[in-house]
Length: 156
Image 1 (cartoon, rainbow, N blue to C red):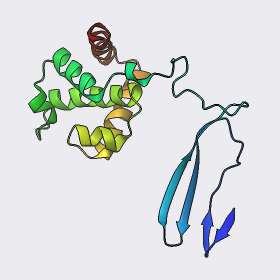
Image 2: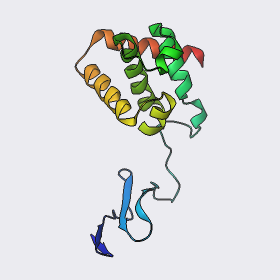
Image 3: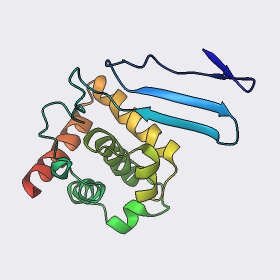
Image 4: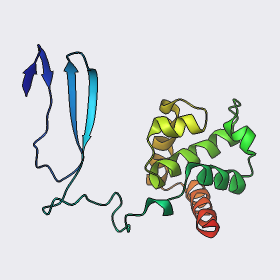
């Protein structure tokens, strides 16, 4: 822990390879700053973003493909999907899309939220809710998620 202009600064060990590290600075003229530290292997080469991927992120599904596949499988119109209504069928479809966008893309919650006209906290809640229900073994939800994944696989 270092002290910089009266504020505490957290800096992880410089040779950390077990996961992403964060450097947060509170102070100075810069204000709040967080910078992701790139993971590197022993040879100094950057690690690949997804285990087993060839390093080409163009094969990852996009937000629009995930949302359109979810709309197709769950029979929801894209306009209603991005709209303001909050009936049960629309919320169910949105939560599945949030979960798949969070798991299959490298996008942040704010990026996903901007795409579907929602706040990032709504995306976080939907992702967490679907993940919990899948962990508890909800068969209907599992079937819906697998159907959307099959649609994504057949479209590529």
